[in-house]
Image 1 (cartoon, one colour):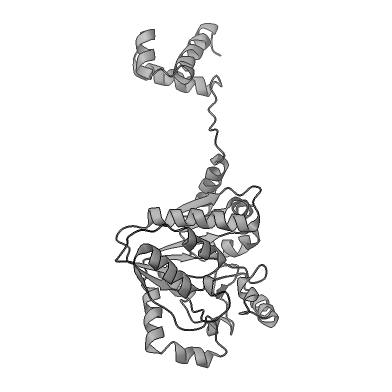
Image 2 (cartoon, one colour):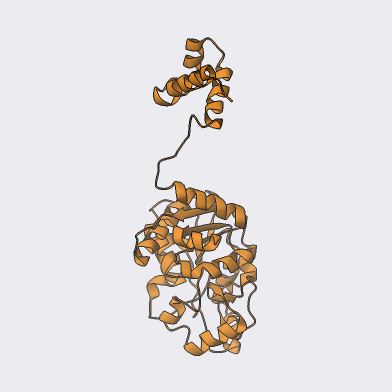
Length: 314
């Protein structure tokens, strides 16, 4: 128990430091003690409850979520975007903006090969990415997607737009994401132009990917890549999510399914070998899909909205 005199002295020191803005050295000189003594007194003022420190900022709660996610899932980095009161479209835009800024800031100068998947959230990332000069950069689409519907979210288009913003170059995967038969897929992936791009995809240093839920809010269904029968088959096979149109179960294991064998793009096995993968996802309905992707070891950095972050932690 502190004596009245001790408590009065702690209050005096704390007031000079936190309210008046004095340095510890100035306080030490006034009271006639050494600076380390003042440091200990300030710590004691916190310990006994005389001083309580609050960080007054709207981002504090998201920073706390980031720390918890990094610890729980052993992530290299996490960005949680505040989204209270935002519509899904606004949230997607906010996540894309955060991811665009993050990528521009954290993409090392020696990275020369960047892979990109497809989807509405990644389209926002590319839209928000700043113009800069990375002449040595080559952007590679990680999955096919030739067609006339929603071309603005296809990997080829995103690779082109991102390369343009970087003042770099890109290549094109001239093939659909999903073909009718395994035989056709086997023939296509042996074609020189397609095989070369698929090989480049395996050797990117960084990849930016989205994560989808085939059973809810599926963009693949919206643009006609998946039919109701396909979704039922995926459900029977235990599919819980997809990355670059490759489906995996709740453990992150690629599913054994005819649909997975008809995809033209990077395999999940090859994705896992890429040194650094950034997952950009919006929507709490994808929480199970994200969890499975994390358990599968596909992602090192995650950029998501706060509602999805809370769903993951719960």
